Image (tube, rainbow, N blue to C red):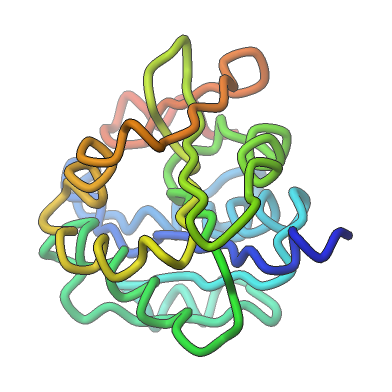
Length: 199
């Protein structure tokens, strides 16, 4: 593994309560016989993230009990119901002082995005000011790579369910888009109909 990759921490946002799924926490949805959060961590590991921080919220205690998350750093976000922005802030806060120079942010409810897409975005990391995102037919999606120089700005602006959207729009001139439509599908597991994507 290159030193460059070791400087990038995987940051998995897995706090959602699955409001449109009847209140079933997304981290605990079953995929290939195991909790979805385990699958998502496995993708980050397979792509080369040696350090993985997982932000938990809804049913955090049950997720800790049921999911095998190895040596992941588990970060509890008590404000998870406020939306993805609060989880992104909690996750980036947890990376302060760890030596990580970038965060590779992925979402627990996108099992169609595998290790190859994550690897492509990881490969863009060059410095603390790196800013990159997967794109699907030219449309920005996840995962997203934030060099540490961007963390304070994202923490200051991430609110509600918009996460870093406003920050990325403001910095789109320096954002590298990495096309991944040929290796991944960026669907979300948001509604009962979406559960058909799980195996």
